[in-house]
Image (cartoon, rainbow, N blue to C red):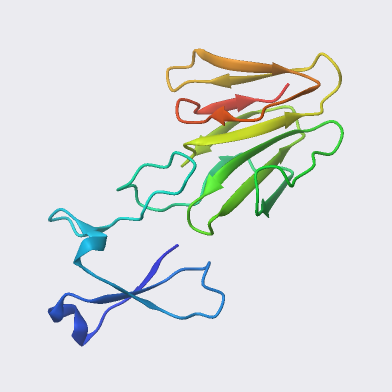
Length: 162
C-alpha cells in the first residue's frame, strides 16, 4: 500500500510517497514524471521480471489464503515442503519474490499476478496442479514432482493445486 502525504506542496505539484519497503520510513518526492494522465494515478517503474510500466503497484494476492506466504530475495533461494505446490511471483510493492505455499486441495483465485515467476510441485507423485485462464480454460499444468525455472503468470487467473 502506498501512503500519500499531501499538504501545501500539493499546489506546487509535489507529493511524498512512503512505501512499506522503505524500512526507515524515509519519503521520496513524487514528481510529474511519476504521474500519468489526467486521473493522477501514481505509476511505478517496471521491474526486471516482465511487470508492465504504468501499472499501479499492488501486492499479489491469493484466495482462499495460502498455508504460508513468505518473501525471498532471489527466484532460486526458496524451498518447498513436501506435499505442497509453491508458487513465486514478483511483488512490486516490496521488490521481492512472494512465495505462496498451497497445501489444502482447492481452487485458488489470483489477484495482481503478472510477469514471469515460477513454481515447485512437491505434492504426492502424480498429483496434477492445473493453471486456468480468465475464461476458465486450462493454460497449463504440472504433475508432481516438478519444478519450473520460469512461468508466465500473465494469463493465469486460477490455480487448482490437486
